[in-house]
Image (cartoon, rainbow, N blue to C red; front, side, top):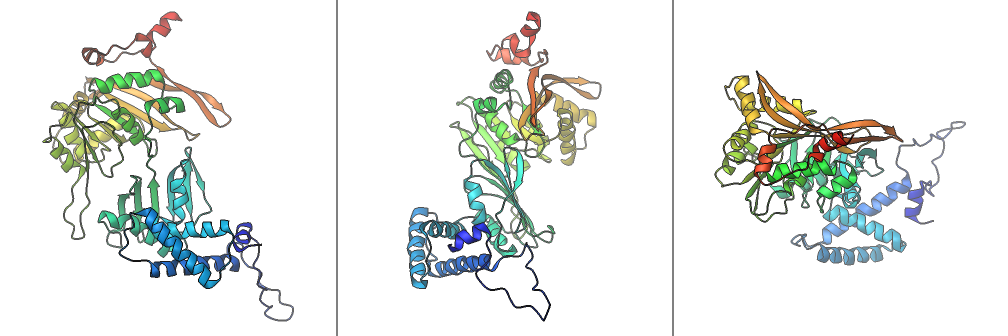
Length: 461
């Protein structure tokens, strides 16, 4: 049986076990978790060929020309196998070649997951524990890095092209891959389990409103209502916890913006995929090695106001920029959108208030709430349910103030009917409430049928 086949099947090495320590003393069994000599042999072979290839490759080669680089690596690879008289089957040779190419040009053991369209997130907890998310569920994989040094090389390969660094003085960084996938890395001494890498994959083909309806994330009626809200220039906040699909949903909503408007997007790591012609994409910048040169989201929001925007879209409000965003919404830049981390629409308002206080604004709470109530029109709440599916669970309209409290009306609410075979059964239903801003939607020439709000259904019943 060939080398790789024996490794896959977990068969023991052909080497003889070492002799017992003494008469009557049994040989010490190998721990189940310990690497077998056979696996070590394969790893040594891979490392040896890989190192030879790196030594022989031209360091000035343009690695962006992938096809040409692969051909060069292939020629050198075949030459090394022939020189060392290493005999492998065609399938084994191809697998070894792809693994080595992934190490030289890509992200090593993560490459198969980056290529897998069913994987939405990759989580590396130290060199030996790699998890992925598929269809909202997290599962452990058999893949692993050879060592912490191996994992650190991959992290540095991601971060270095962006002009950033990661070391003990800067032990965590946000970055993105060339395809737009969002990356976060954190290393010792902050991480006690070794380097930790998290990759939120970027979909080359963006999800559409039709696809979200097909997946059951939202109903056609609610999507038609939100489309009207975007076209009528309502100010919208998409709220939800981590991994609920806020950026994806914001991207879908952005698709309803008319093509003749000037849109400015502001993000920490560019993820939005707007298809309109007139889009200006801005990305924040961390400080350099000397601690200078930082450009924050807030800086970009303030600058965007001088760029004659029709719409400002902030990928995520998480700090003092919330104040400037609200100021923009209140001073003629209607139709702006952002996302916020919160577990309910009411929590989203509280977080917005706290973020404005972070801007060192010496304003009374009532004044801040009046700003929020006059600026925002809609809060869309997303949630990842227990079966891993992502749903719109609430669409709430901001109605105004009563005393010191911001009042809201829930226009759509997700009702759970039960659980069948581990799948949550339910539907986003209209509550029968027509929000006050419907006049604004109708003034924009958009007329929604009463059935969208469930009014006609109640009459028929």
